[in-house]
Amino acid sequence: MSIDLPRDLILGVATSAHQIEGGDLHTDWWDFEQLPGRIQRNDRSGRAVEFWTRFREDVELMRDHGIQSHRMSVSWGRIEPEEGRFDEAALARYVEIVDAHRSAGIAVAVTLFHFALPRWLAARGGLLAPDAAERFQRFARRVALALRGRVWQWHTVNEPVVLADGGYRRGVWPPGERSLPRFARACRALLELHVAGYRAVHEVDDAPAGLVHNFISARGRHGSEVDRRAARVVQWCLDDAVVECLATGRIVPPWGVGARLDGLDRSSDVLGVNYYNGVTTCLHELPAIMDGSRGDRRTQMGWSVWASGLLDVLRSASRLGVPVFVTENGIATDDDAWRKAFLAEHLHQVCLAIQSGLDVRGYAHWSWIDNFEWAEGFGPRFGLVAVDPETLSRRPRESLRLYARIIRERTLDGGG
Image (cartoon, rainbow, N blue to C red; front, side, top):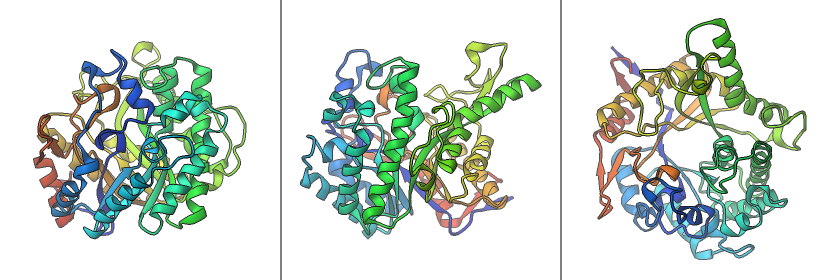
């Protein structure tokens, strides 16, 4: 038995600037990496995989394997290395990168802010600086002016909760703080950046724009009613609350209490869904309330893999009433056979979502290529393309060949 994929479903890949470009040195992440013990094995992004200079090689590989879209990001610190001074050469290089994709028949989605802040803004308070949204709006407008008419869709902010959690609750990302009040402030600040970025883009370009949120499927561990209720609370906090914020313009718990953000309810032409894993909840085992099921096979990130959870979160995201795109979905493993199974199983869930009437328009696999995985350094292997750590030569994995066949033939063997 085989499952047919819709012909109009856009199948692509995803990356981010700081993780692959190399030399992204005007950012808070670059500075954070220099601190001993902050990154696994004391890795540093350094030259990353040199996408900044080797992008044509990657675009050619994408074209040869039928990749239809590339969700990439631009580096705010590279484009605006000093406050108010824009690097025209950097902007020109991004134009060159986008045009190379377009010449190869690959649609480009651009994320304006994917975790890395400019060093100058970090020094003034980062996300919590009182003028952060204003400065982001200026930056976003400059990028939109440079790339208008070239971009398939815009993504304003990537994974606001993940960023706020890493930087202000767990303290494992810049700025390395552990404060629940500042975590809540950072969440709101990121929604303010989103609204500012959305407005800036639509001042100059009519391509659709929206937020990208990391969704996580939650389930009760033991099947009891109390665990199911706990799962619903977790699901609200992780997924449904952000949809509620975007739909109503009200900042709801855990993002805030009752306050409105002007323009938030008019800031979503599309919604990006990042999905990697599920969690279980058990009120009698509080240390494991956000853990995976015991005995699950874990990825190099320590995550459990629940393909069926993708359908759950696509239902949650679709409540906003705008087209939904899976903007990231992937697995960190050296076992490429597992990656192939992961890809097919999750695409099967996308098919089920579409068959059930959900407006899912595209899927982007994370990642196109092995990269610098933030605090985990270069250890986790997410790429459809492997990279030699010394020469940085590219080697397509079998999973990429499978993806190319799926894109070409539009079928999933064995029902995913």
